[in-house]
Length: 355
Image (cartoon, rainbow, N blue to C red; front, side, top):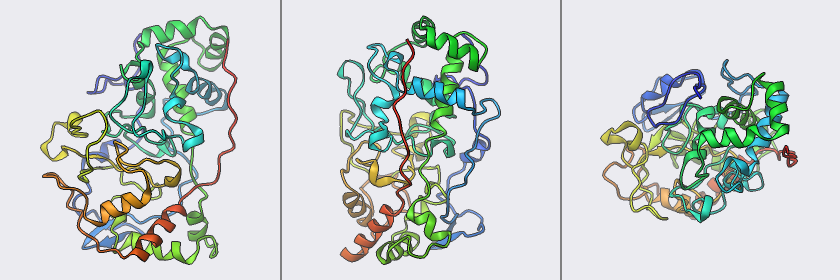
């Protein structure tokens, strides 16, 4: 089955690319032009932080509408996308644990253990490149990648289409939504459409910057000042989604089943990208432990302590990192601010899967 658009270098099939991803080739490891509301730390200017836009970027090739989102939600929770018929997208991106995985690294078909921690689905519609190494150029591409990963769903695209094509409910929905039989393009587009509705916003931080003075307590307000200054967090966690969408080497200790993980290097083959991983959003970060690409840290306190010491030892360590000298009270204030990034609870109901 042929899918529209380009074939990615990673081998996954891309079915839709968010506008503007071509701008992501350059790194923010150097100074960027000052923007409205920009922040400058040690002469490095980055976008400021603020409320999340109310409109999620949607590619013209995959417009969102209710019937498609409903179909995508069913597929997201359907274990029949996997070889065992038991591992769904939600198995590793659980809505009850911040649409992430509370395990250090994820478990797939047959108990296979992955080498990376499953990142949250929150606000992925605002993120141009997917996976920790950015190998997928769209949510559509990402949605079908795990299907063929031997330590995730361990299935084939062809067999998934064949299986779902035999289910009367899916037959009817695909004809209603896409005007076609069940196909891989539609599976990818529907799941991506649903994922674009998974949003963390209207946090105490958002309400505070929009004028609700009591939305954040004094500790969180002090923490926000540290975040944009002494703690240097804003150098990577900037913009309304608290991520620069770039890749940085923090010297994170390698734990889990992989002896070595070179991250972005596997995609670009550029020496500077060895050990670099995508900056995650910090929105609703308290819901998505453990942290880092390999789940090395169980708590935000551990993360803050690690970054306070200047990260880990690594020849490709980001120049943004340096020892911070934060006091115990400053660390507590910083964590209070991170907690204030927790978005409004999503009203959630499990879908009924077609038969």
